[in-house]
Amino acid sequence: MTTVPQPVEFDIAREETFVPALGETHSARAKAILKAHPEIRELIGRNPWTAALTALIVGTQFAVAIGFGLAGLSWWWLALIVAYGFGAFLTHALYVVIHDATHNLIFRNRFLNRVVILAADLPMVLPGGMGFRACHLSHHAHLGDFDRDTDIPSDWEARMIGRSTWRKALWFFFFPVFQALRVVRVRGVVPTDGWGIANVVVNFGTVALVWWLAGPAAVLYLFASFWFGIGLHPLGARWVQEHFTGDDQHDTANYYGPLNTIALNIGYHNEHHDFPSIPWNRLPEVTRIAPDDYLNLPSHSSWTRLMVEFITDPKYSLWTRTVRPEPGEVQPAGV
Image (cartoon, rainbow, N blue to C red; front, side, top):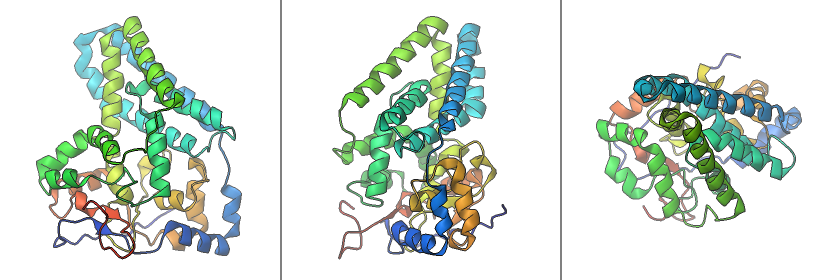
């Protein structure tokens, strides 16, 4: 399928406030699309083969990690290079697996989907799978709500980063930290339950086992893969692509580029928000069936170019993130 991404325009003169999303919601567009293309309902379902893919990726990550562990810390520099050029892509794919399991798109049984989340989170070192699940479900239920959506930068975060090139680069590099701090702002989103405790115990137990079997170099590779996979890396531009549209008529943008192949189609973000019950492997089919509804929406063809432009161009900032204002308000509470 050939797509023609539409350019995303930003207003450099915009004041230092988040962009209020006033346009069409995902639910309204989904209803209209289903009315015109009822065959899309046939795409709704689950893909149990994602579990097999998860096992392959997790096994590969641990195999590479153990290889570096046996080589010793003298090869730490090569471990970082391989983590950036290879491991980061596997880590990012595992986060997409966690994403689909969050929506119960792998198995019908919710218990098994949560088991997949725990398994996919094992190579990440830091336990975040269950936290992601809670935050992502809240993101869908309260998209653009400053007080409920941890995908929105905190007010202090946006002010601190501003439009500075080097600060935006540091924001990408330390993105896992900023994301974790937003959970403090949006209290109550991540519950303390048995699954969360299991996530912590299983992850740290796995890290201890890998360290004992293969040494610190193995853990270094795994941690670097995790850090690069969601940070200062072309894949990290996904966090900007998804909802930093700078457009009050569209609060979500797509990525139609080659990295979707190894990022499990996570770039089809409007399609996902419209139809969260369709698994990752069928999202391109939604676009194929209803091209007029998607190819005219804001989108990007290169995550790498987006990251470079976001960092270097002063018209981009964390303020270009769209929010949904409360009724009667122009900006969200807390801004």
